[in-house]
Length: 273
Picture 1 (cartoon, rainbow, N blue to C red):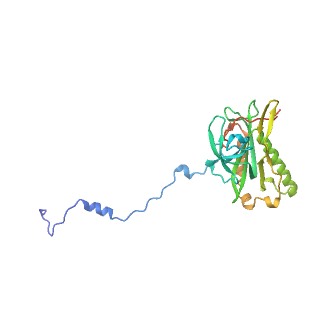
Picture 2: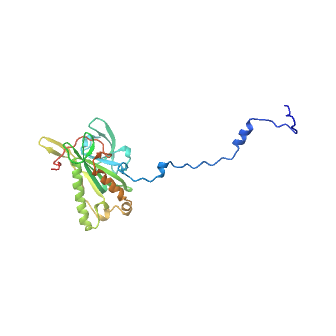
Picture 3: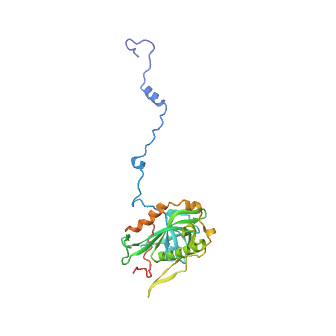
């Protein structure tokens, strides 16, 4: 190797790898903190497009829509929601159009009802209507806690279509009357557990056009000390969210979540005139 002109002392080997080695041996720099995107840094007002959403359990009017076939209808919840429903079994719910949904099924539930909402729904467009129209179906949703082996779970929704909703309202009113009597009017019904169940099927309709339904009823058993849902469950209720959920159906709009299609239901005299 030739010595450059004017250089004294020993030769230094020249290698292109040296600068790279020096870079690799530099101390690691701590990662820069990630700044959340601007949209995630804001607090928003919850309008009608950001409505509260809850898992749901639906009332099925006929046990023959389930596989294995049941002697009566009852409560069905899609398996995908993974709700801890006591005393439930696996079943397949068959829909009128031929498809199916895997569900948990039970013929009874114990719940604490906070609020309800209902609307007339067009069965073709599945839109909520401003009032009754011919062939419209009444849809009722119930916001509640579900009683499980671990205590209060929720909030969740119960969904009823047609006549089943009217029967549930009547059952709930019987329960509220029992609460008022037992507490001398000092406590509301939502502070206590209510067990609702599938009763024996009955035929409804007019003349030769009758169909079987499974009525939903209250079991009639109430003890305020035993059935109190507890301070923790009551203190955890966000009443502003509950009221926003209840008021969401005061105007027409999309039917929304909380229903698996089970076909038309037979009606008694529910036409409001």
